[in-house]
Length: 154
Image (cartoon, rainbow, N blue to C red; front, side):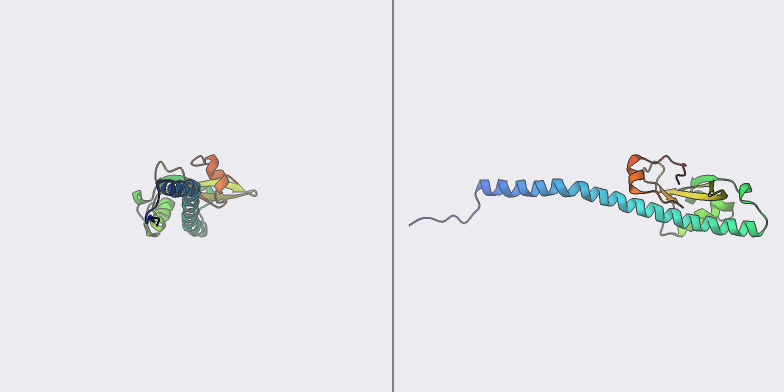
């Protein structure tokens, strides 16, 4: 009569561990890509939120007779501005209310289709490599190539 083993052999355990290792090696890089893509979408969304606040400020200023050309481009950290500090304060106020995603922003003027307009860029931290922009949100391909802060790409 033969004895039956109730455990696994060392070879079987090594094969299972190798299979798990191969699967992990395949999945981890793709998961990191998904995380970065999600961060880019968040950054573009926050830039759009800031853009809408800036658009409201610009519209109110134009109704009162202030030209877009006289509104200064500005960079800053959202928590560093008060609500009464012009367009920067307006953008900062909206970003701080946006679920704590205050971050850093840049408001700049640009000409789009021959008309003066503006853009807003946003990033979470001072040294963050993921930057969102609106209008013309930054694409994943552009993000992978590296975006220069304060550069409007149309």
